Image (tube, rainbow, N blue to C red; front, side, top):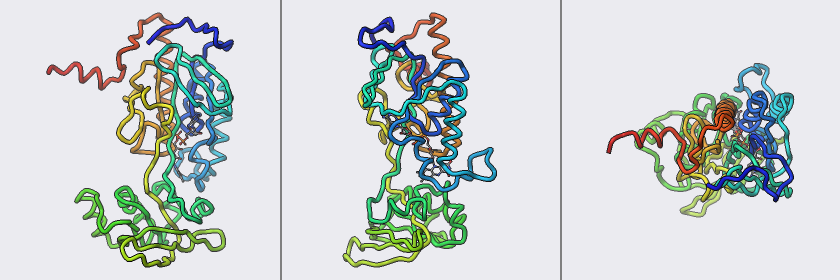
Length: 342
Ligand SMILES: Cc1cc2nc3c(=O)[nH]c(=O)nc-3n(C[C@H](O)[C@H](O)[C@H](O)COP(=O)(O)OP(=O)(O)OC[C@H]3O[C@@H](n4cnc5c(N)ncnc54)[C@H](O)[C@@H]3O)c2cc1C
């Protein structure tokens, strides 16, 4: 890690305290906390302003809004609150980060280059789509990618769940609401653990539809009414009536910026510790880019808050002249591992 004095001739801009990448719940919350710590954060929205919540039905499980509100309404409230305390929001997309020198460098497709003392990465994730006709048009109108979020809207209804092992887990969640849950699986068996298979196969509300893929989602009066299917063994086609289609064919972290620069797990999520630190001092991450377990607005908000608090602490230490070992991985589990005698 080379050190510069923050007055690079390449840029006229002053060095930022903190740049936040992403405008989902984690990003705006990081902005709110960093702004209230007087850090005047810069938040770069990315192409999906507001993140995944903008494609949701009413949000009923975010605390503080008992009357529920739409995803876009919630995003506007997040933004207004973050800006009220001084977060600067730039509608741009980050196409490069440089984290092997300090201040870090952030470059955007809009041609901007920022130098920053700390970075909070909140680039989120996206559900993998089936890419079949009808899917996009009916998203939010019966097509969903989140059982915990949308299951409640299907009380007493018939739903189809598409996918493999994660689909099996989500199907169990859906049995709390739906009257009938059919899992459409492309093969003739699940790869899931024995315990999960037993729970799925013995659940009276769940039926397996083996060797089946969805080729089209059909709607009537603006909401899902049926799907067309193809038998992967016989080639036979069919049509299944239903009220909803839950798709769990993968979840993709938005990690294009990070390979070779920050440590990722096998699924491509940033690996952070409890303080939301990545393996580079001064670089933090929050929300679904580092969380593949909880994946909720409330948890992403909590992580955004924690990451901003950690960044604030990091900047305080930097200002106090504490020495940063740029070559040492700051995450606590690395230190704990090193402390265990061999
Ligand atoms: C259909 C659906 C319904 C849901 N319903 C609910 C619900 O009812 N309740 C609930 O609690 N949760 C719900 N969720 C989950 C919730 O939306 C997510 O957990 C939450 O949005 C994750 O927040 P995040 O900030 O980590 O990332 P995201 O919301 O994924 O936002 C990521 C942000 O990063 C930006 N970005 C990515 N790459 C770059 C880049 N290179 N440069 C700049 N910016 C970048 C994007 O533009 C985006 O703004 C739902 C999810 C889906 C898909």
